[in-house]
Image (cartoon, rainbow, N blue to C red; front, side, top):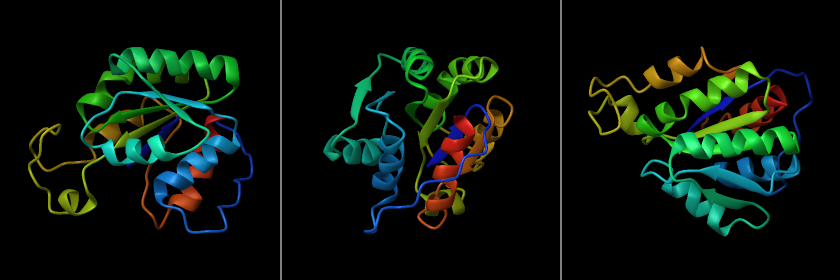
Length: 173
């Protein structure tokens, strides 16, 4: 999973929940603590497990967009009104379809967190040729594009989530 954010700030990250939540549950706990009650996005095969977690999660509702650009602009509007928003897309084609939204939000300092579902880590480490890629084994190319469009990018793992998620949210705000 890749996390992309707009805007910069220096807030202290919130403490993780007492129990050991999954990465997705922890992500949603952090977003909910910031007042997010809706997340916009488009389902895709690399974000299905995250969306399954969100479907079972109480307090945040998924708003399914017709396409990533539209979902991104809805998230942009939500961020302008509510102070922070989140967008979920899938790897490759989904995240590239949201580029205009993310670049625009960043240029106008809209607090938006873009969450990208990605292929399994093992598949990436083995440089497998998979759909939604450039078929060259480089799974970092799209994240690299986003380094020019937003304030912060991170590749989330269970090992770094407690550090990266609060940091990304604080930078977005």
